[in-house]
Length: 76
Image (cartoon, rainbow, N blue to C red; front, side, top):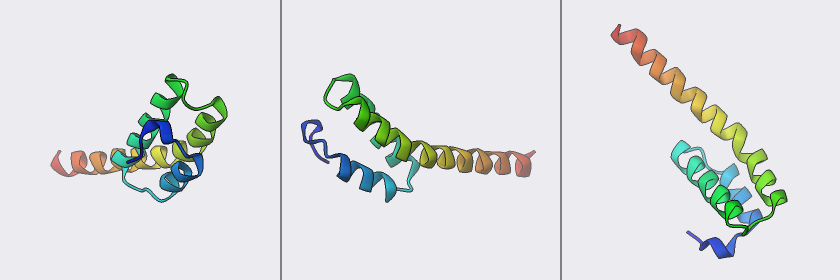
């Protein structure tokens, strides 16, 4: 993993697009938020990453809810 000081928007965008693991997606989002809070990236970069990560995180969350619901129905 790169140091926070080496933020590369294109690399982060590529990683976000190529990641399907919810844990890794949330990890990327956490990194981006930390960088933004520290003032190490601009609002533009934060918004660019949000636009890429939000749909993937939403889909991952939906799948997790569907799996949980399926287990609950089968064990009820």
